[in-house]
Image: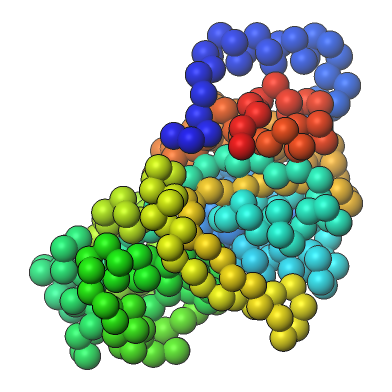
Length: 328
């Protein structure tokens, strides 16, 4: 894994002990008050579990979560001015492009994922679909499939990247356009997790999701070759062939996104109303025995330790520095 490095449980515990022994000046022992967390829809299940565990440890804290497409949430902060303490994005680049440097100062990479094609027993051709024929089944006129909005949700533009990469990997010119021609615009939803209910109700046959979402919701899914699933950083040169245009920061503007491996990012906003509670939650999230353990149990590979670049480490709160390593 690109951002993983060796860290023993003994070293981790010793480091934390030293921070506490030093007085814990950067992280208070008993944070309290309202803690506002914006997070990607694909993090809803693990963050709900983290909320429960964290509030049990710190009963004075009231976590209020808002989930949605990462791009949309970041713009609620940057354009609408909605207050938030923490932002966790399904694409770490969203934080870099929209929130840094005006609204946040650092961006830590804490988890990965991969794209899968989800379905249920109710889906047409459920017994026939496989990693070798999925693109043929999605072209059938009686099959309904969809993805999230690429302008609002990273899972949406990643789904479009998968289609482009499939055309190149399977050497089938025109495949991308043929697939999109069989996907009505009404099947493009604001959040990828909205597609889950449509699948479960039998209103849609297939939907592009992250593997973690499929695992957490008990969905069947087709795994893809590493050339397509955006889950293997060693394939980044191949992924880079995919290009998706999405709306930009200003109305009427656009930006082009280039395919790369899936990396989740998290930051504390510079104007966080409750920095004390935010730092405590991030310390829990970054802990191998806390939030990272929950992610792993729920089908989402965490980075242990969490990774941050050289520019970000200097701006990271002191109490969090022992929990991260410097990476690219």
